[in-house]
Image (tube, rainbow, N blue to C red; front, side, top):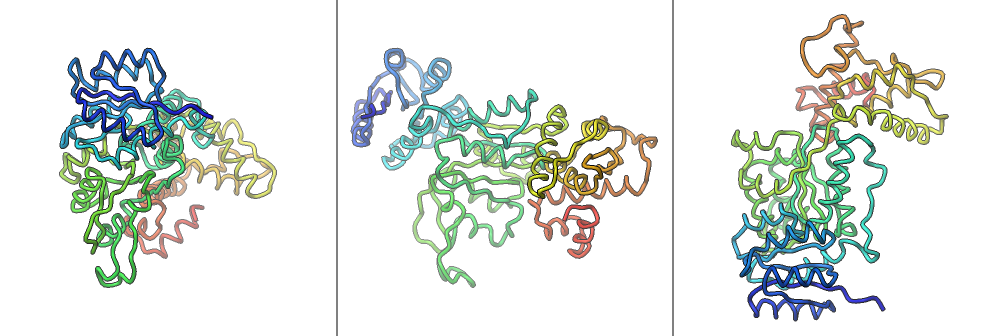
Length: 446
């Protein structure tokens, strides 16, 4: 018979301690109680705990003091903060300090049981955290740091804002945070905020009831309901219209949503991760993004490095892509020449990893003798290795190739920004769909 899991309760109010002890006891958990920071530290020094629940205000300090102590000396123990109702700033500070999650007073017992259940799944039955698989390749310092941050953020329920350029792998990072965390068995629901028509957005996010509007022929759950118990990933969150930002903020703060035509609110347990290739702070300053929503989503920022910042990983990434292409086609493996590899390492890659994959797929098709040469990459890049400045005309061997390269970059950028929705990308570039399809085929992107 496995030993019961143990929770440390820290609160100076006897009634709160008793309520928590009874509730957790009914969940078949052992508890220990402390009235202040000192007693809590004494318990942590004597026994091993699976979770700590602490009040924010304590006689000899604050819950933040305890969070910092546990982060330094007992980092495997998740901490949940109990705060006064309406103290959102306090809760956000706790999450930034390393708290797993927070509860507000008066304590909602259903929410408490959900939080405790999620926290106790953090390390799994063996006490071992899962590792990141080979989908996130790279041995460069930026990637080693990114992996470490992903592992740390997976243990939290704090909202994370994932920033980075188009094609750098923001959705993959979000998925790995989900898969390494305690919600890994629940849904991961990605949504491109820029691809949903504004008139359908509320229905998509919150669902609707039958007959609530023309065309609502049956009840339809929304994205929040689909992600219940798991993670909702809001990609290109900067594209949300202001009216929807207000409703999203309320849903996140209240942890409840109301479908269109619904009479009651539905409680939802969702961790929110978001991303955008835009500068979200600049969007706030320009008045296109609500500051209160920005602070609620950007509790912790995680920046995904561009491929330019980790050029030493290009060889490893290229090898993986070529191996995948060979397996998919049943053909012998293709090598890449030293000159071609140097050409790749000197290219700026505005489309990042996605552009590298597309470039190698085209070169794989064009190359002869099972070897990719620099000419197969069809790059007419201005001054390889430079990140700006005037064009070096001596590097432009063929004007048509150079202009084709610019066209390719613009189309790739539009596709990235619309999550490869070809119709939406064509509209951004003011092209007809037929013209877009022709260009994709011409550039080997279809």
